Image (cartoon, rainbow, N blue to C red; front, side, top):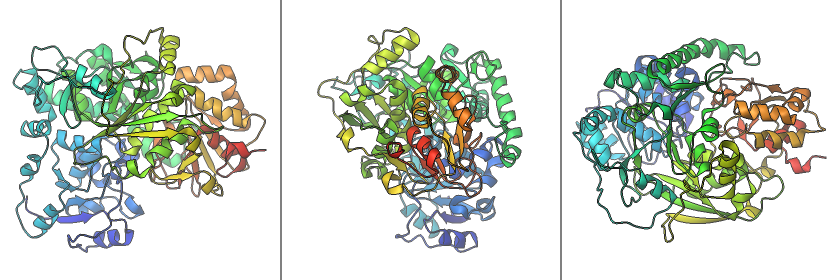
Length: 640
């Protein structure tokens, strides 16, 4: 590629960004401060994602509102050919449309200090060139013709094989025809392994006609694993099946009984409490995506969850835990919060649309074996300290925020949660830990076998979990082992912009709050609603504070109604909705209004993530409830 267009540097300084958009080309010199964690919500907003999934549709929306500077189609009109970012480029959602939007805006090469795992995989699988070598920018500016295919030659073997096949789906066609063999050794000696390594090794594809499983894997290996449950939702189902149809036509989906689609992201967009502007911008196009999902489910025999559907409604991550996941499973959905199911001692992670199309046809999913950080939780949580406080405290630590575990561009990492401190919480509460590992730049989290898991599976599904549980081997190795005494965990918040922006609640006690959201896969479980209700009983909301409550599933709503929690919320003036994702992604009640600051139990607080500008603080359900009472961020233990 020769540089015939321009280079866009995504810098921390909005004035320098504005100068570029006004026509100034910055030199490729080192020393610029690049924006940290340019996330997929900033690359392509949840609103724009409702409009479709082609480059022609999404290109003009690329980076709209980034730094509150970029306007619609600024990048396309600016003739940019290369985009340059900082660390953690591509944080957030698994939406592959973020890559599509780059292409639609004319970007042919992405350069960054480091890439988040899902975004990087989406680039590999769809054939988007990228590099962490900033020297490439200088070479292009100097007029050199840079071999973009040569960049792929620096990738690990499986990524190279995918690139040579023209993408993951082309590779899948060759695999189904028996024309490829594993790109990794399968006759390997046994070694002591941690939980994730054992699950991956047990399900690694050993080659055509051979049973799955090899003796061992280790960090950095890239293997194909037999996927168990696979899932999609309204934002992704149409794109997944369009890719599927384009490569394999009407060929049947592998093991359709282990596949489901979820109507959860758009089910609250028509609610009376949703601002009229949000409805006008999103509702019609969102309903078209929903209709497309319903049709592809019918045509391919895929079960469908949602209001009035054959299977119950709720947030996909919650429903996978309730109905599908088992210890030892490999679970994938086209959603970054798939790690929720890691709470059941499973290996669960989010993937993009191309990877899901591949998994639906072949039954396999690519896995880069992660580095594993073991977090041993000890002690007893002080009154008011919840798993939300623990995970915000953990992912805000410099070790995770700065990705100090990383030694190469394609590294991945996960957390293995263990220790006696876990037993004081139930699966609802522990799922917050695994869910939010992705917010720390990690692939997933997995919980070691413990009493809450066995109790949940027995009570919920009548299953004896013991045959499925996966324990780490004695002598297993870890990238690092962290000892975390719950006595050292304060009530914690994430300040606006990123879930890794760790701060203590005490240091933010003067922040005024106008909008409170108790919802989502990290804040809408029965345990979450109970925690909020216990704070609110006998109290009232502060004047002018809006409160929205959204249960995470049909069963959660039923149990919360039976316990009187939902009626309590209604009696205080809260908007209580049906189950769904809602305002977490700007598609339901709780979208911030002009001038509002929000306290939310959701898992992500990127700029405009909730559908409108305005600062969002991430908090626990108890803190959210206490903040509704006082109108400022409040420690519930200090309420009179």
